[in-house]
Image (tube, rainbow, N blue to C red):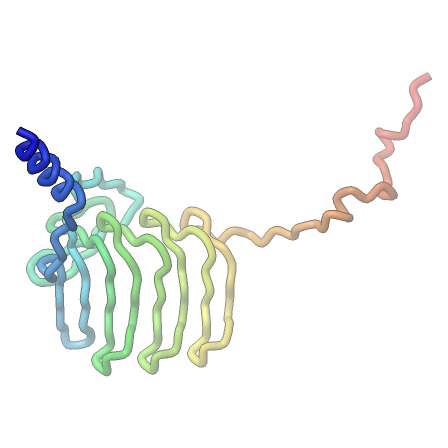
Length: 177
């Protein structure tokens, strides 16, 4: 009886620590077109998202990558994405989650010069971005908020905020008799 209990617990403890089956490239997509080469993943997404009309979904069907605003039909891109020029230099790199761009996305020129870095969150440009010219020099940087470049805010220093010598409004200094 003790043997049976030991075997029983041994089997369950081994099953509890079993590793996940490795991805053998089953969900990788390799596409070659006349002007570029793409490596993308279409890992299963579990439950498909309910499409929103304000978002662009990227998906794979008929041996090509499609993009559609507000809908999709096929396998949603889900995982790393890399697009290459014919000279094998990177053109674009990022991550898809359930067909939507997420995280940091980078774009390069044909010569391999970094042109932009943009952060995405759930298919929306959100967070810091940096744009470079064709020589790699900084052109613009800032923050996106809901696909719109957020205006720069001038932050006052701590001392400016607590300045005890600043002028008071006339309304604050009038005496009530």
